[in-house]
Length: 456
Image (cartoon, rainbow, N blue to C red; front, side, top):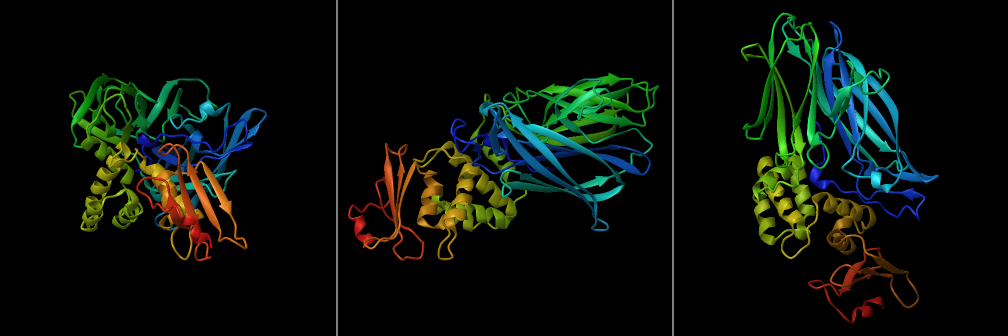
């Protein structure tokens, strides 16, 4: 399975207005969406297609002649599980050019694709993407894959879920195959906000040209319940064929689902079955909190019990004492995942008098605090400045005062959008670079009107 960052985090933030900046740097991490499908090539090899998806709003841009230009470096490697050696190593460049900031939407995706021939066997697919204008910004994924032969009986290739499929004669187009333009959707996110129609593509092998086959398309919920189903009868008249179809998914509530394609005989008896997990984002359909927590759990899939514990420890600033005690008693990976999914669902709805905050935004603040404010062997987010940044975000104004003959170094942070304007005052009381909060006008924070005595 691919890893994605779930669609409820569809946000786009840029560091500075285009009219002022020569370079636009996103505040959120670079995200690689990755999917693949395998097809028949010959009697000893298969053909692997790898699909990449990037959100334009998470790419660094330079402004030149009124155009916004970015560039991504994609390193794709395939390693043999048997030998441990890389059989494929490709470094490619992906230019990302947009006309204006309105195109830098997280709801749109820039898609690319690469194909390769591989002998039958087991492999690891490893992809690293780097933001060329900001090389420290990168993301990577590693996925297992098996390239197998297609037996003599009727069989299907892997399933490719797409944002569109249409007839084409542009044979030189990157997405052209079998007289069709097949545009993949590596995010696997569909719905009314982006792709209300979900297209699917697969190849059928070893058919009997004289027989009639049934093709059943099914959408399944996480509980295995059939939510939508269509069946058609087809006589392909050829030994190898293409099956391309579509389903309207705009009426199904947001969540994680499986799309299943079943090739059967004329009576409907299954011959071959393939399926793939996908995600729906239909915000116009209200869902229960329990369903929202189930959706949130998809973001946490793949995290180990220790990684879940580490994430919750970083969320301690917005957790209650009871939640901290309860989480400490949960030892199983699944239990921690369920607890954390419910926790983040409530946080993103807003609770305990706090404004809603997305999990992705909160964790990005933790990362930023760690990079800026580490002091005295303490993680940056555990320091006073780190805590304030994590809870309230970037300040609107910072006044920094270095050491002088009269004062210790100190900083004054101001937030104009919090409680009609608040201030946080930090002093490096020890002289070792750890600024301590000595006063704030924010309700619930430390208040000391005589805080300037700590400057002496």
